[in-house]
Image: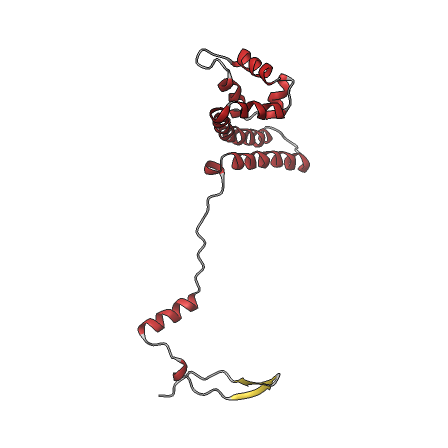
Length: 175
């Protein structure tokens, strides 16, 4: 069955520079057609397609991955066409707008999955700064930060669960 399918691909898509027809056939993948749609034209299952890809070795598998990556551009174009079509229509219901938006977003997601480098979210740098900590570090560096020995003895103001509770120290000076 695989040989029959390969002959059919060669017959329909074969060219002088590509007698097997695999480049022409995989161009349909690059154009964003679904594997299911392509294979239904041939009367075969999706499983046959993947078997055919694997039977071609690393070279055909690499061509398929390139075609799949290129299909991300087609997905973006399709999503834009869906949204642009909304501009030409008047009196749209919320459900129609929502459905079109969902279809466009799905194509954007497909583009992200198929070509992360081009359409995926870029990893950013996450920086958290604590101004208080930076200020304390600066004071320590210049020698103006009071140390534990410089603080006055804390006054005990009460007891909680058997432990003494100190009052907050008064750091103001009366010089």
